[in-house]
Image (tube, rainbow over all chains, first blue to last red; front, top):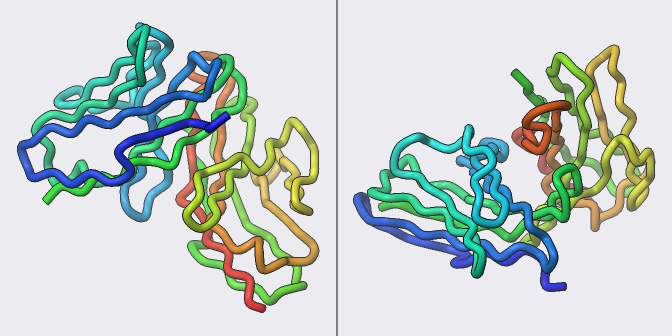
Length: 113
Length: 111
């Protein structure tokens, strides 16, 4: 099992561009979580998704950020019109069930110039 | 609101010395506590969770509800223990899947 996969590992965007971050959960996992880690901070929960459903997006900024987990393919975290404050590491995790251990991907480091 | 505090940003110990990484939490209900570790150039991985009451790689952690602490301990540090350690909490009830992380402590074991 390859574990949770995230790509790209590093992403550079200029202010105003769009960033798309992809996450493929572990095989058999249908629960996906996104976390953001700002510099010098701990990981902060953003959103929890199951296949085709957003269960909890309470940690996600209301504007410019969206997430999806389609029936086929990876989960996508999309950030429109990026600003410098979006520069961070974005981690995806997946679990087999709701209260099961969350396994983390390697993260995507987003740098907004 | 739930909060996790790791007071030490960096901890350096000599090989063979005891290690204690501190973690304090704030939560009104019954939390579940975790320690995650991130070795250099590797992904974040679960080290242990308090409900398991197990020892992993020689590390143990006991939940102290009176002091609201979940300190990570190891009697004899090894060089391969050098890593970033994060304490995390999940609550009970709705939203219990949300992990709240501390800022992390970087452990450096000096040969």
